Length: 120
Image (cartoon, rainbow, N blue to C red; front, top):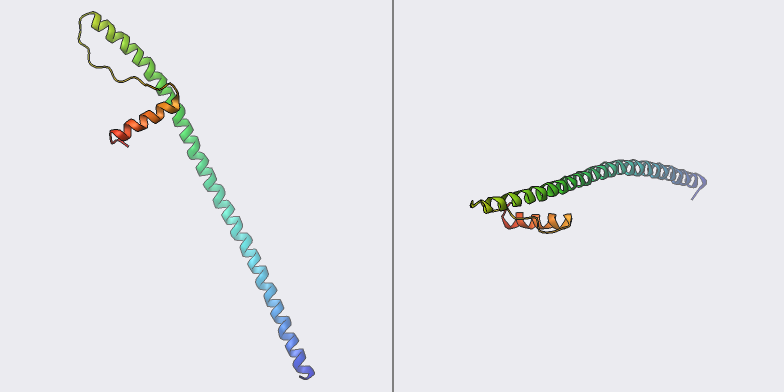
């Protein structure tokens, strides 16, 4: 190989190196952009999930309030039914009491009732 051929070959290798560096830089930039986009999507999805959990928490607190209301109404209705029976009346059947004591057990019991009755 003469000097010109070696110089030409070195120029080609140098150009290939420059091109490879450009490709590498472009790849790194695109990777960074994709990572930032994925982080944004992740944050949005995480916030949506937090919103769902907050909504579930609110519904559970609301449910606990309804359970307390039910217990109070049940107690009042039971006392009223007893007085009606003492007065000789035949009152309608009472709805079932809320059996479990803990709210988690009550929710589980009610879910099982809904499934059993085909309402869920």
